[in-house]
Amino acid sequence: MTYAKTAAFTEEQQQLARVAKALAHPARVAIIQLLASKQTCISGDIAAELPLSRTTVSQHLQELKALDLIRGEIDGLTVCYCLNTELLQQVQQQFTAFFIEATASPACGPADACSC
Amino acid sequence: MTYAKTAAFTEEQQQLARVAKALAHPARVAIIQLLASKQTCISGDIAAELPLSRTTVSQHLQELKALDLIRGEIDGLTVCYCLNTELLQQVQQQFTAFFIEATASPACGPADACSC
DNA sequence: GAAGTATGTCGCAAATATACGTCATATTAT
DNA sequence: ATAATATGACGTATATTTGCGACATACTTC
Image (cartoon, rainbow over all chains, first blue to last red):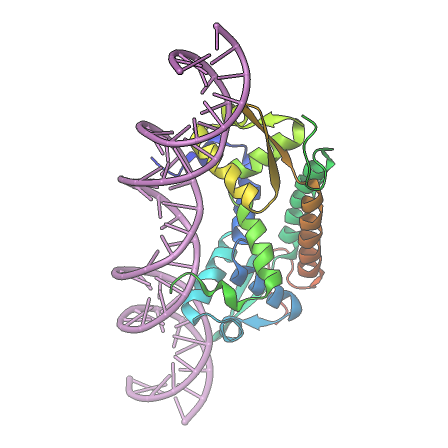
């Protein structure tokens, strides 16, 4: 029963953690940046620009697709991946809200003590 | 040599991924929110509010501390953890920049096809 | 239909993450 | 000093992630 206590947290916290996990690998960050720069991308091209095998890239793509952060349209022989900008905007707001909440706290100074 | 291809990516991408990984667990999200709500927190109190054992919470705290997202000051017998709001603000900007880049792309529509 | 091309799926090995009990350490109180 | 309390460190079992090769599938072309 190890490693499955996620259910005990807020759906909000879980959602944030889920998306964070999707961004928790440089390859996936790179993939999103790549899709953002070019409008049209096919899976093969993506693998060509990353220092990973095609199989591994495909796996990362599936992970992003599982969260619906990216979409893949089959276009004949190739697949056209693109960003789900709508969802990304929602996610952005979630992160923004979280960071605002976190940085609003008038906690510690630069490197010295707390006020406790 | 599995699982260490991170070096092949941009330092920027790695940094974003590192922070994302720190947020990739609901417990750590919860911890940050908890520290944001209360200015003063000690590790024991934190564990008391989470559905995890004290040991596990301590581990999560160490992970956040390793990234310097939180600070811990020893105050006699207890430890006072608090957020590193300065760093959090920097991180917030990194995420914001990333999301702006990602959402700026005029890619797909709601659920239909790409324009490729 | 056969051959070639583009992708996804499956299974495997190694590395990490998660969760927790137990012990070690440090501080306070008696 | 001794006992009690609060934490971190260590070890361990399990689950998950990562990376990749080999195979399967689907479409195009000839």
